[in-house]
Image (cartoon, rainbow over the protein chains, first blue to last red):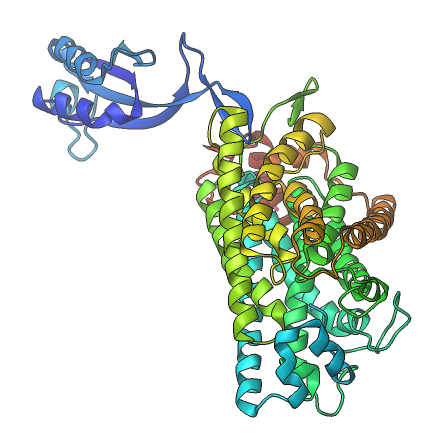
Length: 113
Length: 459
């Protein structure tokens, strides 16, 4: 069981959600985050003066899936969230020990499906 | 906007030729129409206070919004009360020495027989309408200061300043022109208050912003680091409300519903606002490489302030030129105060109200179609108001600083005046989230606030 975390451009959320749905992902969590990578933010103008915005708005998608689905999920996320321009984000894969569905008490992979 | 006393009907008719009918008296129907128009204009000027409140909220950070709204709420209220108590009688004392007069304490001190009939003020309005319209103007001068000192002034200190400024300074200097004082006798012209309202407020704003110093973080190692406003939609709503209100500000300053003068004044007012906006758009685009919305909005106000002194007396072309120059001036002035003088004015009040107020007043000397108006007299008026208001503002702010202090603590400024002065945020009123001390983005409550919340819960 793995957690796939993807930091993506906010306007790519719908594409990513659809791509994940198509390969059978049942649920996901989304958080608004701010951050920067190698591009180090960008500059904006206010009343004629420039200033640097270090932390740009991004979305973090979190999906926990059985091991055999990890590759499909990361591919789907990478394909759907890519614009080819700087700031497209990153995907992280993290091991997860267990999952429990609160309503029924099911655990392990069955709690994910 | 000189108020004509019953005894000066003839003089009034000479000043405003299209009011010549007044010599024969106005009919009851005309009197009613005049009075209704003037009450409507009082309502329009009242709406300007909502415009100031929203504009200032939009151009400042979300952690100070409650404080900004609170100051605007207080100013209009204390302004009306002090104007009833003394301001009206100080500004329009009747016959006086031209410098300082007082008709008497309390509203009604100037109430004479015939104050509800066409015998009063050429039949333009009743005594009560007169008071109401003028009272709405009075609070404007202090509201202008509110924006320039935003995000760092102690609330009680500002309340004391605003009370004295609107209750004493504005009406006394105002009497020099509109009360029939020495500048009026000299031929100085200020139709609706480019100088009497806007420059007076602007001088106060300049002194306040200078004495307070810039907001923390505005200059990093001497270099300008802009502090963006929190809400451009609110700023836009504010400016459009102000534009709407200005139809009453200038239209009502005709002091009757005279069809020719009111309609003409509304057209010059509108044209100057539009020209100011366009000039500021292209000015900011040219200077900063991008068109800046806050500058475009300031440009509208710049044009409005500029046309206010001569809205009834300049030509149509003159009104457009006044607006264009004002719109260019405001862009240059904002950059000048930000980068050269380094006086921090979060909303651009000094540039809009002081700089363009001076421009508009001098422009009467250039564009007026009335040969009696001269540039030299206008300059004397501008200088007189500058000296008097600067002295008064320094005295009040200086006194307040010595007794109560002017500026909030650094810790409070970082955390925001909403929590520091009022214990209340403008947004996210629940415990779910706070407003971060930086540029207004949502974040977890800051450590300091979390501690205080915990303390108050335990108490």
